[in-house]
Amino acid sequence: MEILYEIIDEVARQEGCDPIDLPPLYSEVDPESLQEVIESTEAADAPIVRITYCGREVVVEGDGTVEVDGGMGLQGKTR
Image (cartoon, rainbow, N blue to C red; front, top):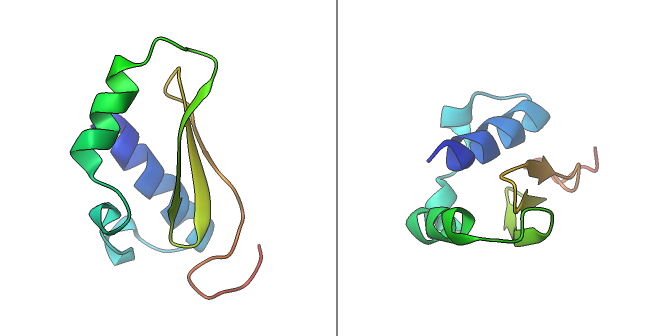
C-alpha cells in the first residue's frame, strides 16, 4: 500500500495541503485493484497505470515510481 500513500502525499505536496484534506483516492480508482496491478507487473520500465486524482495526472511506473504532473489542482489553477 506504500504506492497509494505516495500518490496521496505527492498530490498533497503539490496542492500545499495536508493529505487528510484531499478527497479519498477511492473516489478515482479502486485502491486494492491499483495495488494488485502494481505488484503484478513485469514491465519494470513501462508506465502501467495512469489515473487522474484531484485534477492531476498520476503515472505509476512498473518499478513503482510515482509521477504527478502539475496539471490543474483543486483550485483549478495550472501550477
